[in-house]
Length: 124
Image (tube, rainbow, N blue to C red):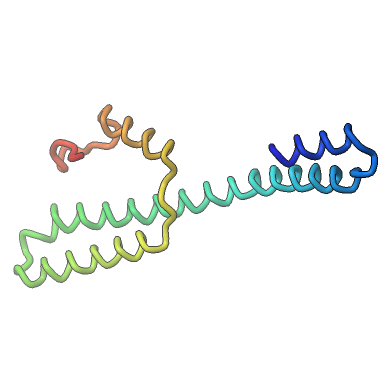
C-alpha cells in the first residue's frame, strides 16, 4: 500500500522521478498478486494439515474404543507413542494458524461445533 502511495506521489510531484514511481507501482502490484496467489497455496496447506490431524484423531479414537480393551499396557503405550510421533511430526511441519483463524476456531469449539460424545466435555 505504501509503495503504491509513494509511486503515485512520485509520478504527480516530479517528472524526473517517473522511473521510481513506475517501479514502486509495479512492486505494489506484484506484491498484491503474490499475496493473492500465496493465499490459495496456504489454504491448500491448511486443508492438508487438517486432514492429517483428523486421521490422527480418528486413529486415536479407534484405538481407544476398539483396540484398548484387548491391549496390554505395553501395547497401549506403543500405540500411544506412534500417535504422539505422528502428531509431533505434523506439528513440526505445519505453519501456526493466524490469530484470526485461532479466534474463529476457539469460538467454534466454545459453541460446541467440534465435540463428540465419546470425547467428553471440551477442554480449553
